[in-house]
Length: 105
Image (cartoon, rainbow, N blue to C red; front, side):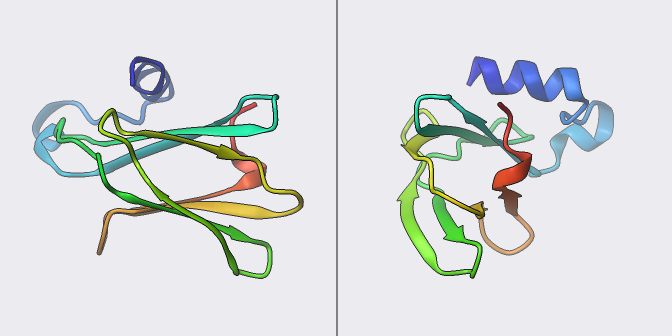
């Protein structure tokens, strides 16, 4: 999680001040260059994202992987071939979908 929150702070993803109490989802994925993708998630109020479903879809929208964030709010899976997206399914207004083309390398 340290890697994620350091990146979030550097990119301005964390909200400071009165809005910091909001329950905004935070999610980032990284291409490990070894054929795997590593993702981390959380919420801006510091609450855990453990157990949040992670859904990977191919370019046609077909689900090709389902998992959930570990107790440390991360997950690693094999990198899909072709176009894909990764969905952090935190529920209504708490979901983030990242296209594979926007995953940090």
